[in-house]
Length: 248
Image 1 (tube, rainbow, N blue to C red):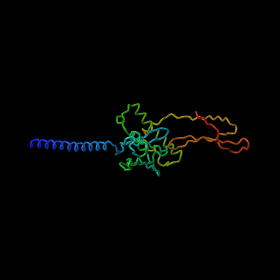
Image 2: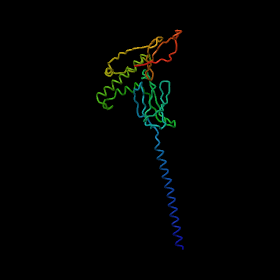
Image 3: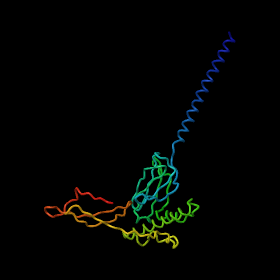
Image 4: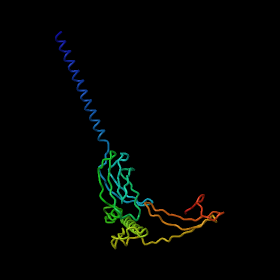
């Protein structure tokens, strides 16, 4: 009887030990999974680069190590205004607020997490500085063949000339044109072909007169058309309603 009791006590001890180990092991496993879940949440830490693109206007791209949809954002300070860039595509935030005559204006950027924690700051830069850095790169460093490399440099030079022309046209900071630092060799890469602008106007209403057209230099380039209309009965100016403008 005593022997049986000892066996029962020993069995109870072993079972209790096994249950306690299972609980401890289960706790450790849950903690491990929880730690893995915490590590899987991506938090941005830095800017990885910048570049300039064209899409109906000048675009300044801020590249980061952020993940799409992680709630991070970039705060841009440009001249006297501040812009919050929240659209994140593969870690890239696009800034559209630069008019061509503003290519030489400096901007700064700060990278924030979804919890509004600032994690990185990008020092002052500009479209002009970015284009000049690209212009200074060697063919091997950009990984282009000779034809592509020359086309890239021609495009950069044309962009700087375009910015300078916009400055002169809008009388904006003409004492520091963005193409002023081009070397003679780089300046020679500018597109030589000149475009001849043509204008043909066809008015279908007798009481409508063409006044003129203008170019609007903003973050995207626009064309403004001006017409003058008169009421058929009074001859006084009237609103442009019910008219269609076709641009070919």
